[in-house]
Image 1 (cartoon, rainbow, N blue to C red):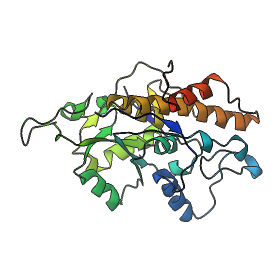
Image 2: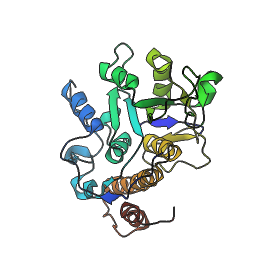
Image 3: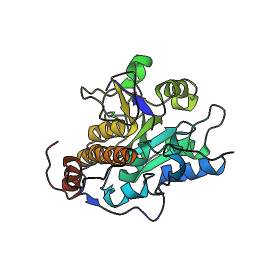
Image 4: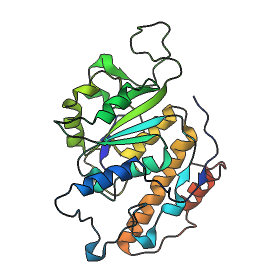
Amino acid sequence: MGRAAIFIDNPCGAARVMPSPALPHAVARLRSARLARSAKPFLARGGPRGERCAGCRLRPSHCLCALRPAVQVHAGVCLLMADIEPLKPSNTGWLVADVVADTFAFGWTRTDVDAGLLALLRDPQWQPYLVFPGEFVAAERVVTSLLPVAAHAGASLARDAGKRPLFVLLDATWPEARKMFRKSPYLDQMPVLSLQSEQLSRYRLRRSQRDEHFCTSEVAGLCLDLAGDVLAAHLLEAYLDVFTDHYLKARQQQPVDLQDAAHLRLAALAGGQPCAA
């Protein structure tokens, strides 16, 4: 998954663990569409016997599908994905779509804009926020929290009552994300949410040259926490830890310990029980 660079009201119901859904989510559908138009097969790491589960993209021996959590989430997430991001087994936008039911995913190109994306950004039920580092954006566009409800029609940088937050994440490498930001004029009118966080990234599947870079699921978790979807934010964090463990253990050809701290934390959160972070 691409690493999103950041300088970082509705109560959620109890969570539960459930098997992989019968219908593929938005990232899975985008992946299938991208594979369908590929001129040659996309070969992920794993060698000649790199079979992967269609539900979680891991090797069948380390399948994660039975551990996928489900929780009520008020916010939505829109993933604008660089060309091959949906194909990468390490992409964590897939985890966001596993947890957040209202996750939308669109491929990005410089010359063509998906009509479905434009319709989503205009949908009156949503208040879109483009998540991006504020230091690269004009100050008048930057917000560090959700917009207040407008006191009157036409108020600047305010939202209508009842609108749900929709977090637009650029799922790409940092150079790709900066290009996407500059060359997507349809994003220019929305407020830019610049997140603040003192935590370090827990993502261990790809290297980053900057300490303030977080993977997509970590950025989504920070957004969910900001929107009041606290349980979903904690679940996504725990789910990333378990996914990382399964991914690395598969690469190292080691068995997974379902009773380790990461799995027990996910199970506790998924059961709606209090659990130390």
